[in-house]
Image (cartoon, rainbow, N blue to C red):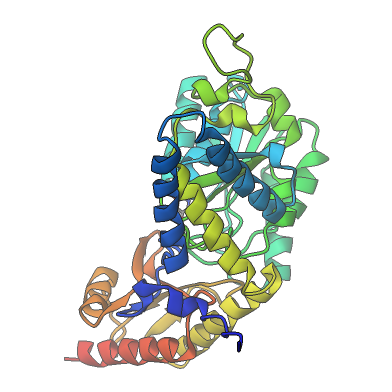
Length: 403
Ligand SMILES: Cc1ncc(COP(=O)(O)O)c(C=O)c1O
């Protein structure tokens, strides 16, 4: 029997069949085999349970299998990986469990997501901490220049009271990558060894993450963006020293080392101390399927190279278009391409109106508030033709805006 060639990943994503899609940083398309894995998992749970001694081995296998796979991606032992619902809870749950003292300083980059910033501000209010800012949003050059600038600015911003540094691995607004392992190494040499919280919303599934995830104290991710898994399941890798210093934040039966009433209220010593209670096992099966599909596309470096081929094509095309200004001055280090648009007289085009006009043509990208701009993402399933069509549509909109 002849062996059938594998179906390209793109053809397994029905979401890509009827639109030009550039919102991978918002949510990735769910491949058909992952949706099938979710359905099959729901069916298995009904067949074996839903609540019975027969079902627990299946549930435990599914959860621990994904924990092991993610630990391998993170370059850490499975005991350092906790499951969460999304990126934000992966940031917040370990963070709120740390022993804060009034007057501690939280050094937060100026390119963090507003949801995480809101949680940090509330933490600061309750514990009387001080929030200070690390400027990184203006770093638009190449990786070496960026890493050098982050190092210098960090040095200038750290004070003896700094207790936490918050920095995304891949900035969601400019698309710039941050030198997380170097920052972690610098913090390790600093007298109070500040904690390092890394928002990895844009990095898991797009960048090689092992070095950064293993170096950070909190490396918080989601499955629903670049991993192309289902929404509602995230994971966080935490450091051993964080596990030793932190208490659980939300406590439930999954936080406990021994299940059952009266079993003794000890918490898991591993990262499961940040897990709470019932979650949706079929989502674990779905994310595991999506990660396997990505693994089949090549190793993390090869996948990033494929992402960058298309983001570079888009970035280069945008350089040729009068009226368009890319936030990055060099081809993007990953798949996020942010830019502003102006009409032929130089008046800025409203990003919301551009998204609407593109949406009317079946093309999807998004606006960002700070800085106010448009963002298009390319993934390894993006095609050269899609990128060309987006460029053509953007040129048409600029022409139309001339009236
Ligand atoms: C950098 C960053 N952090 C956090 C979030 C919030 O993600 P979640 O809803 O998974 O918590 C996003 C979502 O776009 C993001 O881009």
